[in-house]
Length: 272
Image 1 (tube, rainbow, N blue to C red):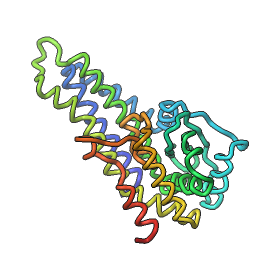
Image 2 (image 1 turned 90 degrees about the vertical axis):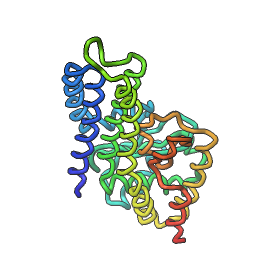
Image 3 (image 1 turned 180 degrees about the vertical axis):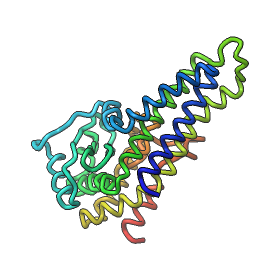
Image 4 (image 1 turned 60 degrees about the vertical axis):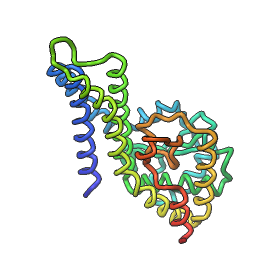
């Protein structure tokens, strides 16, 4: 199935969840409002999802004077990709992601913390992984999922605080509570189905770009260890975009991990 078809299915599925929440909150009127917002988010998530995600993390663009830019420039040349925009995220938690709608409109972002934790060789492995996502055209699906998933979670939290159903609408409180709980979970399940196997593919792509799979394997272990001690305060809807899950899932959340276990990824990289 092509990426355009997968993106269409994703938009339709997440929009359906959006409409269901709107109906649970406000009946027919809620459905109409939710439909209008779903249409707006569908258009906006295609054209502006990268800007939305970067804004969430207060990312600032860097130019050729920054070492990260020069690393990405070198790797993009090796991969035969257009030069993406390069961003730095102001947090000590080490991580990175790629976003955009296609290789011509791509961006890669890394946290300030990752520059302090990894050496240049390991950092090159991480950025090559993100460029592999660009090369494989994963970024549109991931960015769209993040944007609409965030909208669904926001709407569910709104429902949690303000209730729903309204007077004389015959709303079912149990159904509403189930919607509030299950809608974000459903969004995460969709994201996990999209991104889980793609991490292995991006790891392999990074190894081909750099010719140094061991550097990425070491970087993954370091980022994983730091994520346990210093988790990134990430929006759950965007967690699937990062190279390593930015926070440690516990309890029910662990069932919806968007990343394969790091040791499995390391083993594949090292041919074990």
